Length: 361
Ligand SMILES: C[S@@+](CC[C@H](N)C(=O)[O-])C[C@H]1O[C@@H](n2cnc3c(N)ncnc32)[C@H](O)[C@@H]1O
Image 1 (cartoon, rainbow, N blue to C red):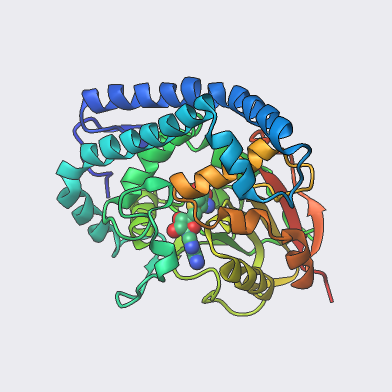
Image 2 (cartoon, rainbow, N blue to C red):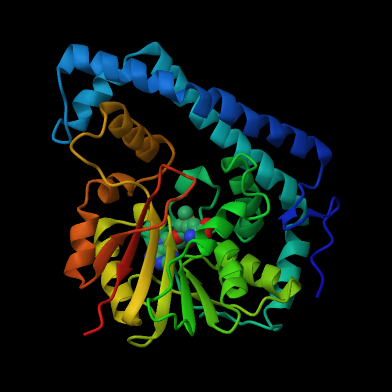
C-alpha cells in the first residue's frame, strides 16, 4: 500500500499541506508562535512575578490562584500575550484542517483500506464510545482527539507547528525512545506506548526493539486509524488498540516496559489514579514505566508559572492539567507499588522524567 496521493505529497514522514498558500500561512504561524509567544514569555513572567510580589508579597503553592490571576491579568502585556497565544492557536487549527478537508473522503478511504492490511493490526470495537472527559477539544483542536474523522492528519500537521518545526521527522519522539530505560535484566518482549496518539513513538519503539511485540493504545480512533495507515504504508509491524488507560485490555504482567509521554496532564485526577494502578498491574515484576510529563507543582514554583498553567487550562482547553500539576504524582506512583528513579535528561527541559520500576517481589 502506498501513502495516499495528496496533491503536494509528503516531506519525509510529514504530509504536506495541500496548497502552497497553506504551508506559507502555517510557516508564518509557526514563526509567530516562536517569536511572539515563546520569545515574549520570559518578559511576561518577569512582569507578572514583579506585580505579584508588589501586591501580594511572597507567594507559594498555597496562594489562591484567583489572587494571582487577578493581579497578572490586569497587566496589559500579559493580557495581550494571552490573546496572541489563543489567536495563533485558532489560526493554526483552522488553516491546517481547512487544507486537508477537501481530501477527507480520499483520506478516510485510504485509512479504511489499510485496516485489513498488515503487518500490524488495528483493534477497535465499533460500538465503543469514548468517555465525555476525553472528548474535549484539547488545545482547541476542532473535534478534539476523538470526534474529527481526519483528526489524525490534522493533529500531525498541527503538532508540527506546535513543535516549531523541531519534530517534523519525529526527532523529538526519537529522543524519547532512544533514552527510554529498559528493565535492568534487559528482557524486552512486549512494549506498550500508552496514549500513543498517531504512533510517532510506537513505530520508533519497534525500531529500537525489533524482536518485541509493540502496541500503541489510545482512546481516539481517528488518531489510531491514521497511525495504523502510516504503519502499513511504511511496513512497520506494530499493533494499535483503542482503549482506556484506566481500564487496560491486557493481562497482568503482560509488558516489560511502558512509555507514557504527556498523557497524565490531559486526564482527570480519578483517571490518573486508575491509570497508575493499571500500569502497575500490566507491567511484569522488574518492568519499567517510563514517564515524560508536565512538571508537578512545588512550593517554590513561581507565581507566573502557576498563572501560565491556569491560563492554559482555561483558554487553551487543558482542563485537567491543574489537577495533575497539584497532585502528589510521585506519592501516587509509590502507593501503586513503584520504585522511582529520575528519568533521563530530555532536551525539552520543561518535562519531568520518571522511571517507575515494578519491584521484583
Ligand atoms: C498529548 S497526547 C499524547 C502524545 C503522544 N503520547 C505522543 O507520543 O505524541 C494525549 C493522548 O492521550 C489520549 N487519551 C486521553 N485520555 C485517554 C485515556 N483515558 N486512555 C487512553 N488514551 C487517552 C488522547 O487521545 C491523546 O492521543
